[in-house]
Length: 354
Image (cartoon, rainbow, N blue to C red):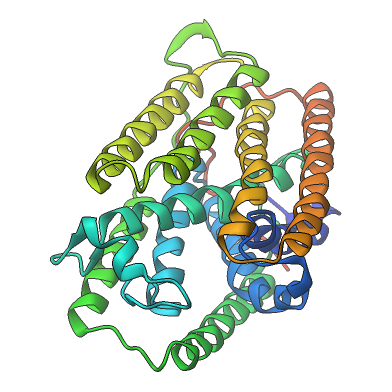
């Protein structure tokens, strides 16, 4: 029986994840400047509670990372669709999204394909999965739930209330823009489709390594994660105004296929474990460290404020990465993993008490 009361740090872990998700997703990226740190309280119910709910749902039902990745993608579409309608508003905020993404607009989808790719990439990787992997690095048994029924209920209510509040703010801030019924319908279909696939992925499977070959070292895995995620952002920065928008869609797809293929193969090899998952998260995290310096300027943040935020949050990210790697190494030494986590892989835990 999985009893969350056996894990004294469960509430600390839950709080850390709620806090870390918006810090990585907004502040480390440079989307929100350090001078606007007060906005963190607006992001916590959305980013933080979403990351915690996705992690808890996957762990409570015996699923793993494939499920979390798909739910994180669904969350990205939910936030940028129903909540702030950025997917559909051609004049969202101060940016002319209709012009930037016009080249890959697909009428059937009601939005731009490259915008969908960007939204899924940012939220699936950095807003949700990187924070989850980093916080789980400090758990001796990362597959155990952290919340009981009361905790889950409160988190759901806070997430729903925060989403509704931000949706109202965005509606008023963006001149009361409201997407068409078709756009709402296609967005809902995509979100629900990802959720359905997520819940049909990896329930209770415990698969052995596909090949006897050892998994690559954590440093190699982290390096590949850094290169792939950096290549994605470098392409966005250097190529968007120089090549066809559809070529960027193809390049994104190629990077996604490479990442999924490598991750799927390596995670089934002998020796794959928590250190590798942390290494992937750290590799992606380091991409946001360098990206923040350029992205803040692109968002119109004053240079002095942008540089201060980049320095503070970048240094914090480096410290967190080092501490998480050390924690994963210590936990492995104390309780080595025997069965690699591939499709998610543990029997569904019983509902833990509060």
